[in-house]
Length: 265
Image (cartoon, rainbow, N blue to C red; front, side):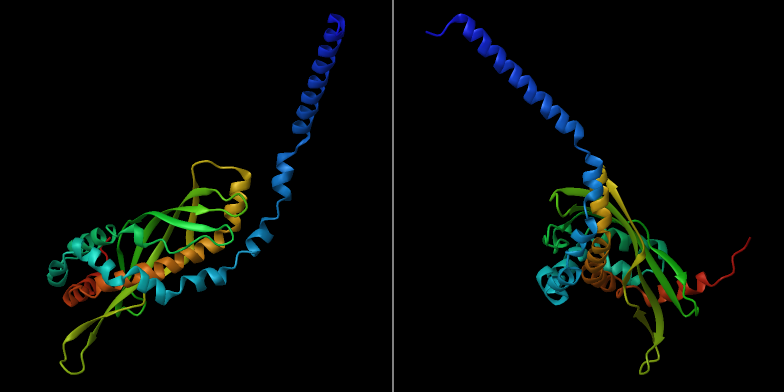
């Protein structure tokens, strides 16, 4: 029969074993150098495995425009764009407010064509056009337009598979010019190519920060820049070109003349 003394001894052995296991676990955690784990993580090779070419290829500009239904996007813009006023006004401030109001009303659900690839993904949460700036071109024959914008997005990072929120700032640029119609002799509006200025892009991490997340975000920054640039080029620029095609040619002429006037000091 099991004696009480034997039970006490057995309990003592079990307690001692548990303390030993817990002590060992504590030492293991203590010995784990998290900094070195992150340091040893080869983010470069992970990013290298991300095929930027396939991301852009998978985007397929033709299908993106088709799938997004540009006519529908333009329709959304028309609901908030006073086309009649834009075609008639020669007041730059009025036209500018009209254009910015329409651009800031875009349906963001149509701006998310990038699916996850190798653990990387992008979702647009907010798009804000901050201003519409005009300056004469270098040859003084046209107007260069710059649209500073801020884009808030969620990025799925490789390896850890979690989303982080980022704020991306950059400019879209286009131009306006006035040409003379060879048949009628009347002035006509010409619109330059719309493009994004990725040389001056700024990417900021929002919310929580850690060494691992910072390194992973730095690793995919080039891919993120290409993704955002492609999105703006293929989805926003056609809308911008459509809007500016309705600008009054007289407004363009007046604006060009005013921009060329000497500044009084």
